[in-house]
Length: 257
Length: 66
Image (cartoon, rainbow over all chains, first blue to last red; front, side):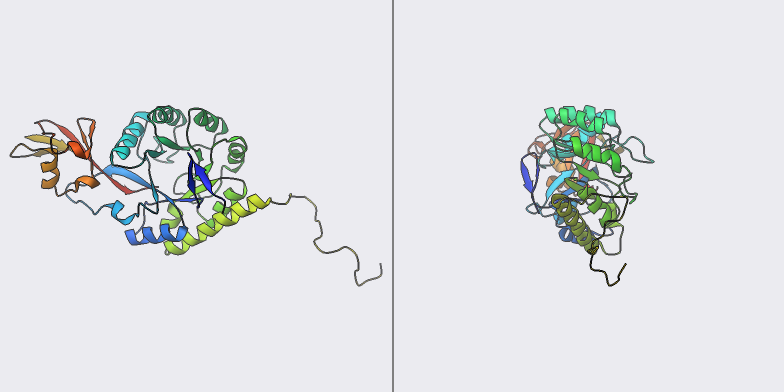
């Protein structure tokens, strides 16, 4: 597949995967490996002092994957910035998936706080990948403050409902000067393929991989969906029509009328 | 000495550095990010930073997330 370039860095996979909600670390690693992904997201949380668990990072090969910490749990710009700084202090490269989701019911991103945080984090030298509502105007504003990508949502996080925001994502893709990564809500490889056919540069998937009996197989399935969609986009889809257009010759029929 | 760690008050008999606290809690310094009174402390400052009564600490780690 043609390479994906984000902030000057080249990737050969256009599928980003999240590491949340897997039944086991083994299942998570299997999904990551079979997906072919090179970028994996992680979250930051308080250590459970009474019950420390083994480190997630011991399961993720830093040679193979770029660790992309998110700011999940942040309700405003200040909380997101604090989490981003903590992630960088943990020794990560300064890449951050910016998420500001004050509403716990739909987890929809706050556009104003997201823009505010993005502007500050870019100035602090972060490579900012903002999770955002599928709003073309906001996408432009985020680009203008220097985000490395825009990440419009297909549907609310974890819903597996697919590209519910399709028309607005199409406008974002048309106008974007940075990679467009469709994030959240993609529940099936066909959803990923659809986003890629439209010209999205990449997709990010978590729940669909974690919420299945066979995360490795689903990782492979999404990989193929992404690759199929990308190849179709590069080849160029044929135009849609209202009326039939025969694929077989309309001459030489075995009849005389 | 009383410390507020991840929102919970805990008592400690003797004075501690960050390094000693992490050891006592059986945490691996490279796997934990320490925030002391809202200031991030990188690993190279763990040994030299003494904790004081009333300090507030956040001990943070990476977990699975999307």
